[in-house]
Length: 572
Image 1: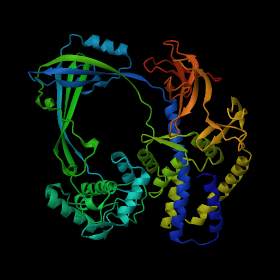
Image 2: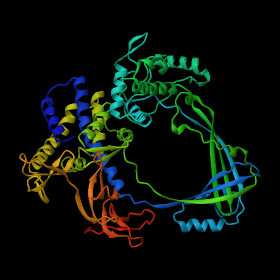
Image 3: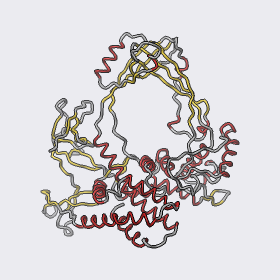
Image 4: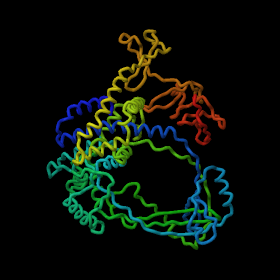
C-alpha cells in the first residue's frame, strides 16, 4: 500500500463505519485492501531478499569424484565422495558413516594422499522403490508458478490468457465454448461429474491401470475459500489436439498445461526402482545412486524436469564381490551461492506460503511493482530499483505495522473470518482504522516537507554555457540545463564513487541496466569493460591485490578464488 492507497482506504472506511455492508461489496473491499497491503509487503519481501544477497559471503568447498573400473565392464562407474566411516569396530561401523565436507584444497590433498594406493571394495548395495504422487489440479497461484517456469509467461499474461479461455473460444464445429473453469480459486476440489468424466477418459485412452479408483485426499494447513473448483478443462474430451486450430499459440500452450495437469491429478503415482552402491577405501566412503521408472502412471501425460530418471545402467551389474579399481580421482572447487533472486513464480509461492494475498491479487501486484519501476525484471529475476528502495524505506518508517509480514497474514485471516461470519467486520475496522488514520496523517505531514533541491555540478552546458544541475526523473538522476525551457539540453548522469578502475585508472561510476538494476562500471565504457555488482572500495586485498567489495558488514576480495574477507570499519 502506498500513500495514495492508504488515503483511498481511509475514505472508503470513513463511508463504511456505521453502515451495513453486503457480502459482495465486502469481498470487493477485501480484495482492494489485500492488493494494496500485499503490494507493500511484496516490495519488502523483495527488498529483504536483495539485502540478504548483498550481505552474503561465499564460502569455499571442494567435491571429490571418483571413476571406477568394475570387473570387465567397459562403462566406468562414477561415484561421489561421501565422508568418513566410523572407526569403531563391529558390524555397526559401516552403518553410520559421517558426512564430511571438504573445506579447502589442503583437506582435499590430505584425503588424496591417504587414498594413494588404497584398495577399494563394494561395502553395500541397496535397492528400493519409491512412488511419486501425481500433482494436484491447478489453483490460481500454482498455475501462475508453473506457467512462469515452463512457458515463461508473466503472471499478468497467464491471467489474461486464462481469462480468454474462461470467457469462451469459438471451436470449429462446436461454436463458442468456455474451455476452462473459473481462474481465480484457491481450492483443489473437483466436482463428482468432472471427476467421473476424467476417469472414463483415462481408462479409454491410457488404460484402466493408470486410473485411480478413489479421489485424492487433499490436506491443507490453511483456510481456503471453496466457492470454486480447481482450474480444469470444462470438457475433458476437448483435448489440446482437438482445439489447437481454434487457439492462438499462447492460448494453446496454456490450455494444454491445464488439461494435462487435470488428467495427471486423476492418475496413479509413478513408480521408480532405486539402487545405491557404497564403495569403501580405508576410512573413506564413496557413493553412487540411480533410479529407473518402472511404472509411468501420471508421467504419461504430465512430466517436468524433476521427473526424469537417473538411469546409471552399470549400477545394476555391480555385486558385492565385484572387483573395483580406481581409474581417476578428481577434485573440484566450488563456492556457496547466495539465495536466488525472486522470480515472479517464486514470489507468488512465497506470498502464498506466508498466507498473504488472494488468488486474484498476485498478478496485478507484481505488474504494478514493475510498471511503477519499484522493481526491475531481468532474465526472469526481480531486482530492487532505486525508486523501490526509496518507497520501501518510507513505508517501513511511516507504516511499519502495515508492511509487517505477520500483521498482513493476520489481517488476511481476519478478513476470512468476516467472510465466514465468525468475525464482525466493524470490530476489525474500529481496531485498525485509528492507527491507520494517525499513520497516514503523520506520513502526509512528513512527506510534505521533503523537497529535492537541484544540485549544481561543474559540468558546463555546451548549448548555453550554464552549469548543469542534477534532476530526478522516472528513471533516476539525470543532468539538465537550468535554463529550461529556453535550453532543453539533458545528459545521462553517472555518479562517481571515488574509486579508480583497476583496469585503466579512470573513475568508477554508478550505472544502471536497461531495466533499472544498479551496477558499478568504468566511465570510459566501451573502451573499458570493467563492471561489478557490489560497491568497490579503495582498499586492496593484502593477499592478491584485487579491490575489496562491500558485502553487508564485511569487505571481501573481488576475486572469489582468493577468499579474503574482513569486517568493515564503522567509518567506511
